Image 1 (cartoon, rainbow, N blue to C red):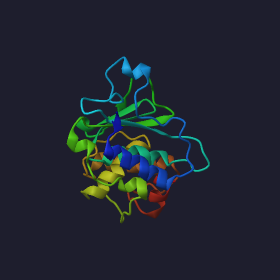
Image 2 (cartoon, rainbow, N blue to C red; image 1 turned 90 degrees about the vertical axis):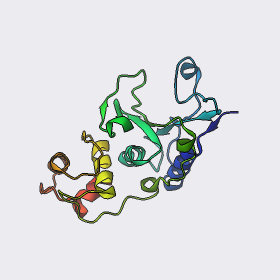
Image 3 (cartoon, helix red, strand yellow; image 1 turned 120 degrees about the horizontal axis):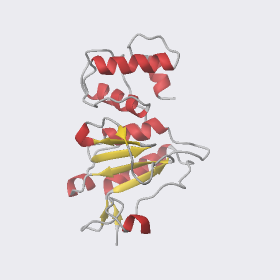
Image 4 (tube, helix red, strand yellow; image 1 turned 45 degrees about the vertical axis):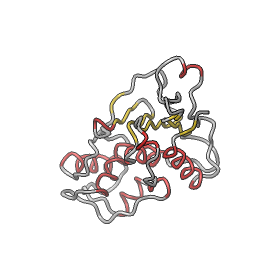
Length: 201
């Protein structure tokens, strides 16, 4: 009998705990007949494991925070690619978004595919930003590490096109400033409480 990979079960459980009254109409994991007729991570592999999960992005009295759903997929070490709203974010491209031209644009849901390995399927890494927004200090140009990479993932989820490399360099600084300008914030390249508040709103 087919099973959803445990790492993706953990993602779904974390999402449901945070947004218990969300819409689940577009949720899915096991392939329907359309998926079964082609190669798809929604189809069980040789271990009877399904390595893909779709998450509804709209509806319900307690809607998910869509940028967080996308960013969480970008940041989790088991994930191979994420698709949402005509964009695909691939691990082998440092999750820099590209245009997606597949059959389904994934406009109403977000798709996670993990790597087809037992390590990825059993990865115990928590889906931490699905549980709660990340806590950041003031982020600024020149910083490196996990928190700048989280910022890059959020910026990409909001429409930027960055390599998620954890380096808050010139391109990320430009993306911050473009985001601030678009949202009516002071354009200073500093990610403090006001910019964080918009990213998490």
